[in-house]
Image (cartoon, rainbow, N blue to C red):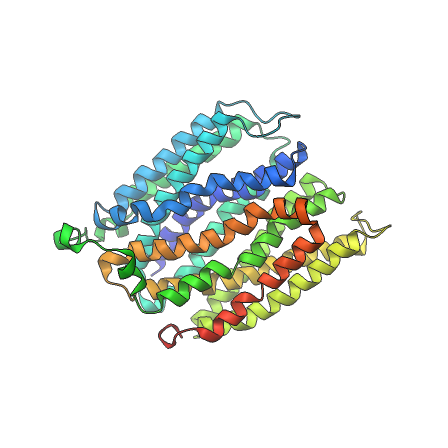
Length: 412
């Protein structure tokens, strides 16, 4: 089992790099250059290829091998990073991202989305039922480490790290990962799809995916469980920036510090699942704690709008902001690990030839539930005001707690 987990850890680490780059590094750089919250939020549209994974998931699941798909997609990610390295860096006064940069970032997400389908197929096929807890812990933790490195870590180093060097380092990382995918013994041992699995009369449709036991409830849950958390989480660092926090401090707080807490939460979630905690029972307890933490974070933002409130070093407010941010990330880590375990368990109930497409459906809905509030948070805050917007996210955080009461018995 350890060989499987090490392989998954390396590949999921690399998969997290584009997300950290665009979710942590890019928004703060753009906001620091004077872009509105609405314009910053609209850059989430670059994640569009992730929402189209169902278009190529059947091809990845039925044609070729995971090793070929992983290698080709990872090499392509390194090529795109090499092209980004030759572009000029962002300049003060720019009203948005240059068109060429947007196109390359879109290609980066396309390559990462193809890699994601192949890697999830590998995980579903490699892991035994008893390995789902540790396997999903490795998946979530490694992904977040990659996101932290490309997000908060690079933001801290950005004043001293040149734009070309940043992307050349990312390109080298991708090419090393491609070599790992090509030479890994575990990938070479996976069976290629049988002819009977991808002949025309064996094609699958949406109704086949939804007919898998537990799919309808799981789809609804993964679509809603991050709505409030993701919307608030994407907005909170930007509002702290508006209240006087520096970009470098936010890189440390919302990047390295918060992701460290998130990884700790994911690790705790995996440890509890390994000790035979039921994922749905764990989710019910932690989601209630997360709702309380978000209520405290909302109260903190109201206080920051009062005269005399400050985030200066040494103030209680600064410490409360840090604790609030880290607590939400910690609880979110536990929730994510338990949720991905439920998703993978549900996909393993599908026929083998359908598992890649089934898991891609759930993963696409999970991503959509995270992207929508992140993309719309800035526009909502600009239009409704930060306080009302945050109150809406607080209400949305209560939805998944209600969903758990409707969970089917085959997922418990």
